[in-house]
Image (cartoon, rainbow, N blue to C red):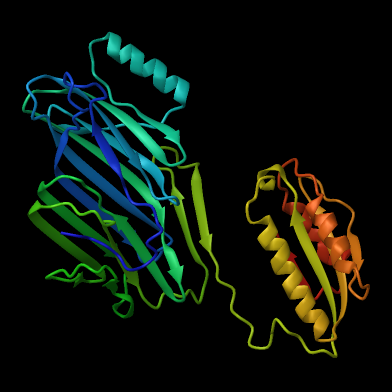
Length: 376
């Protein structure tokens, strides 16, 4: 069976490795076999920016000795791990997030007590690793990873990508997709190439999809499911407030606002109009190694030249900011070599400090009559 989407194949899958790092004699390192995979995805249609995926994996030791397992997994680039569980006597015990040094100290204390704890570590990027011990002879261990990922916005649709990766024949593959608080005109729709015998079932705005399969073979292709919610362009800002269940004084706020497009604003303005352009350029340290800087400068050149060729009277001001804002710098687009001066200025900027956006709030008074802003 191949679970694959025809949308954005560049997105990261959920590759995993599970097995011992040592060899059986002269044989190659033998990974432990995953026999069951359960994937549960949930999203609230009232706040579709984030969806949560829980991946539960069952591994079996088919060898004649007790083994130690090492599981490595890669989350999607836009995902954040938010839960980890490991079975103890057949019951999954959830872990807690602590600082790295504290986790190491706690881990070593538990080992000295004769307890075999689980520990998830970030190796690099979005690659994580955990140790599982012991793997009893002929026995199984269960690992659960929970992460939250960003939805992809396409016009007025939200798309949800769920990686499903395995490289052995599974005894059981269970998939559960749940979308709550959805209206009748934005029901979920699959984009994956795989065809399911059933679709989402609606129960008072709660759309559910469940699939249970046995003896599922792996595929060399990217394995994933993608579905979308249609007609969700927010006429009002999408927002959500979450209260910390353990400390009601703590709250978290998220907002998505899509500004309405003006019907009269065009990238090529009327040649009879004069323009005052203000470029806000972030020169903080976080942008020091930005790979797209040349692309940004080229795009700016294209836009300015387009306006200049249309005979617009253009006044250009550049404001460089970091943790502190610099004095505005003006450029005359009527000069023949204006671009060489501007290009040299942007290329030779030093990048240091932090980003402080609050200081930009007064620009409308310090630089009045600005018709266009660009933020880089």
